[in-house]
Image (cartoon, rainbow, N blue to C red; front, side, top):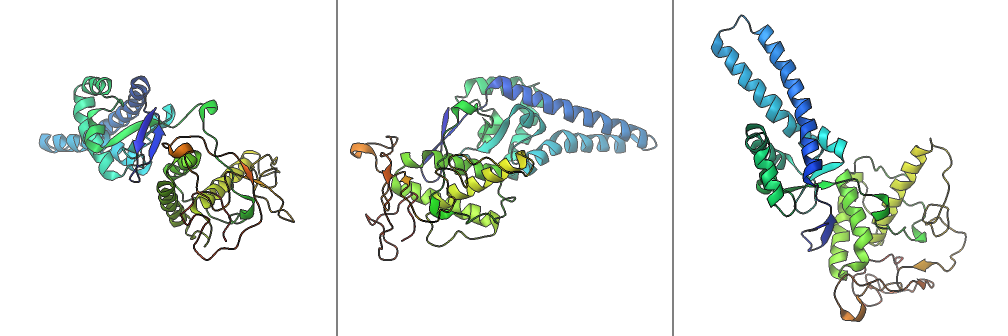
Length: 326
């Protein structure tokens, strides 16, 4: 497990890919690229037989650069770090802070990869990965990237807390198709660890993630809804839609945390007492004033909303919890 530190000084736990899985992914990519390059070369030889030798050499160099260098860079850029081999092996290239890569990252990785993979048959890349603590090759070091595992065993996945009941049906019509996988991953990681974070840091990170999700959906987050609760509700809505697609659009069994199920955010006729992670309007605090990472406070029973002046919570500090708006 590797802890990547974001700009808000939050450590994200990601699993760096091991050398065998990375080597297999590179081998699959090379098989595809070499096959395409061979086909392009044959077509060029047949179609340029009437040209002089200099023109044929120029076209061969252009084909080499475009197919063996340009194509992998384009694929990694458009897929946000998932080439064909990486998709088959469940890997992804991310930035050092855990975010999705861009063209400049893919360009540096591809340019350095020509030397350490193609020209040295992968020897330099293997040595660099073995020496690096996180298994990075030289291209990753210069580009500031890391190859991580996307597929984590089900038993090791952390629990994502369900949204509160008072957000019933708020995001049923929200368009989530434009939200990238990298942002979903960051939101899930935040929700699973928000109770271990410093309140100020957790609130700032939740606001940034909520603004990113709102920008992708084209709809601003509702006023007065805590950003953590907004993120949990959006993630739950995505899970509900995926369950409906998996069952062919039919009825989905409502379990705990699902709409209409026990402990869900389905709208009841009256507000009964429900369990919340911590008291209304109170930020999660480490036990005994200790460090981050202590267990969350025990669940309590939510009372009726307390009227407070606008912009204030119980302790006059921002809360990353699921407290209803005053």
